[in-house]
Image (cartoon, rainbow, N blue to C red):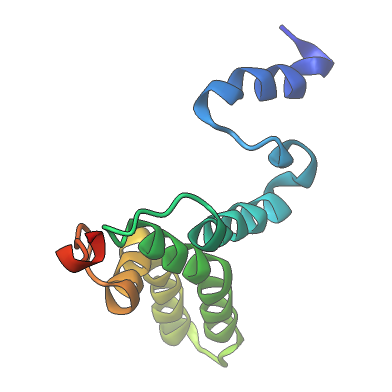
Length: 123
């Protein structure tokens, strides 16, 4: 219905859902990396509660999605492989690209979800 102005219309209506306007000009590839970079920068410069590890976990997951997943996928796709190894590598790419893998990395680096910091930090 909105035709050529649809991207602008979608941007305006998406603002109520905290959509980032850079996605309008950056496109899907660059926008993906910029969105992950924004999450990482929010750990250092954004609102970060001293009581929980939520921001740190989000930053670790974003770093994994931005750097770890492409590196792992590149390494797995560059392996010389036959039909069986290729299928295993494809399955590994699928698993390592998922949210559970990112959460596992975040658990290892920033601690499990919902951990609260010591009460002495509140004093």
